[in-house]
Length: 187
Ligand code: GRF
Image (tube, rainbow, N blue to C red; front, side):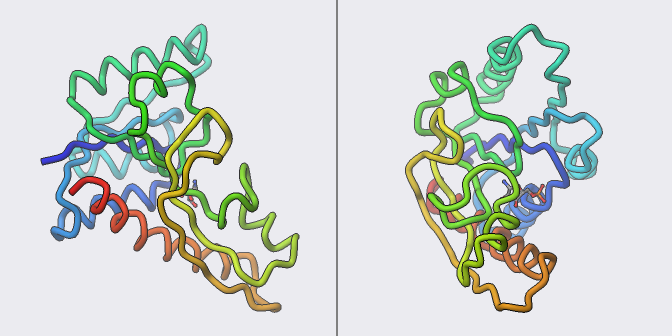
């Protein structure tokens, strides 16, 4: 059984959809650790409910990114993690993690990269007036949403769609696509 660590900072709806896909047998893997940089994030509650071990930390209590990433690497090695799955982790991955897990870190981003990297990708797409946006899953490198693309899927934006409607379609797509792509990567 392949062992993954999910990294998240917020609500964790993607964490939940990955866990559901494991429970119903679509994804043969185990979430062996949740890494969260905001101890009060809702994703921590979701993990606890599922009995998944959590490493929740406050970045400002460490002297540097390298310092907390060293601690994370120790935990990942102890738990024999095969793949690091970023799902709404709002922090750039540093050299310590990148060097410890080359080509073993993936991320999901709510746009068709390379369009609209960084924060508020849905807002950026609406402001740009594009009629098609979507979801990208990619390998993580040192840049912001720049690593090699693994898969993408698109959604249409209609002229009178509200931001909430676009957000909802994108999230629905994320919840389908991430478990599917992970299943292929881990098989
Ligand atoms: C998702 O839209 C993901 O693409 C982005 O952050 C959001 C996380 O949402 N990187 P959730 O915490 O999984 O609900």
